[in-house]
Image (cartoon, rainbow, N blue to C red; front, side, top):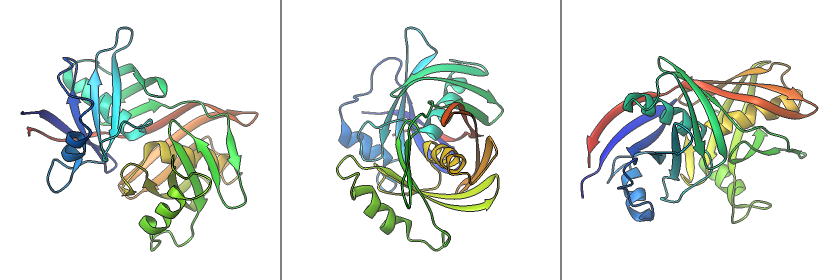
Amino acid sequence: MQQTFFKYQGTGNDFVMIDNRQQMFDKNDTKRIKYLCDRRFGIGADGLILLEDHPDYDFKMVYYNADGNESSMCGNGGRCLVAFARQLGVITNKATFEAIDGLHHAFIDGDIVKLQMVDVNDIEKHDHHVFLNTGSPHHVQFENQIQDFNIQNQGSKIRYGAPYNEAGTNVNFVKKLSDDTFRVRTYERGVEDETLSCGTGVTAVAIAMHALGETSNNEVKLNVEGGELKVNFQEENGSYNNVWLIGPAIKVFEGII
């Protein structure tokens, strides 16, 4: 069976994109999805995304982690899907689409995609970390030695440890660089390793830093392994709305496997 695919990346967070408007892709074949994401035997990606028709909106996003399982929202994946939709002629410079966490609006200008994320009303502040859900669950904690920190080892311990256990969480390590700029490294569940960037992760970090009083800005810059992203938002009485994730989404190549 041959499969036409497209490869996109957003600050190094990379995805296999498939146009599934004809419903030809077997969404239950987790082994094949895992194979397509495999960096040695397949195409190689942090996840696989299907673009599908939607009766009311521009399109529907269906996202799978590299382990082959359908997952929660992926911010960089959503931004890349908007760029893919433009390439397919589904949209021009703006989009409204449905993902697993609900409705999203987006704008695209050149290679920059601005994606509206979910509102965040519940922020759990603990002694050494913050936990919040930005479409996916995120643990956020400071780490001053971030450049030499063993993300794989420490991230996996937190991801599988109490209180997260079987459901797990994504884990973000943060170093403050200035009032509006933070360095972020993320361990992603489903990939089970560090990724070069995580959209829902940097969104979580930006909101967590504001909630902790580490920044007074409503636009925050996040330096990740794969580049730089921006998150802006509005805050009212501890609730965050009008949250936008902003950054590049680039087509890498296309092919048949």
